[in-house]
Length: 255
Image 1 (cartoon, rainbow, N blue to C red):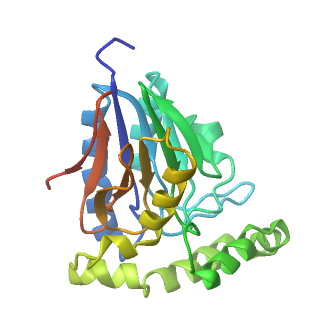
Image 2: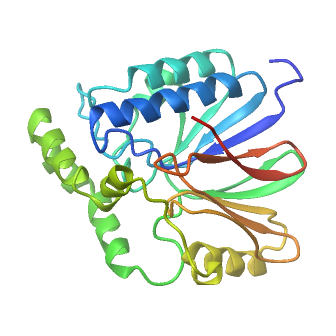
């Protein structure tokens, strides 16, 4: 890798697989174009969760599709550029296939990392911040190994079709169909902004809090030294962030 590879890319919430094969494939191809461009100067690529709307790895079977994406990710990691995936609430059942087959570094919890001279708090963002007790309970249930073992006993055709049936009727699927862009009226009320503000008070050395999950492109200060960046999504916003060694900025990727 040459010294030109100095940028860090952060991208989140693709929800590939919904609302239908054709629409998902169009978004997948758009993402692959970005990855192809990023490999020219990327020091690392961080996928911040919900790469798929549904993903479950059986011992010998993985969900069908995503060949273009997998090929590009393998090409990037084979070239020596690290790719990291922070599991989201939709790909919580990613176990080891992406690691063993494509050498993608899989992260199961929030992490603090130093990139260049800046300190980053990285997380998909689900379950963080105040409230949302119902989801936090559901997440704990999904993470129980016995429940994962029970689901594995469903035939893959049944398990996948059942999950995709509900996925394609979800709020996110309807947003894609309608072409809506999610907005928020008050950034201060966002759970992840509130969480970042509290964490920045506890650890003033953190410069950036980077999240996915909320599908809202947000870049707001949470202290005199730190900013909270929510990456938006690749559902309707097609936004991502790039850190050039000095500053982290949100960007839009055109069709």
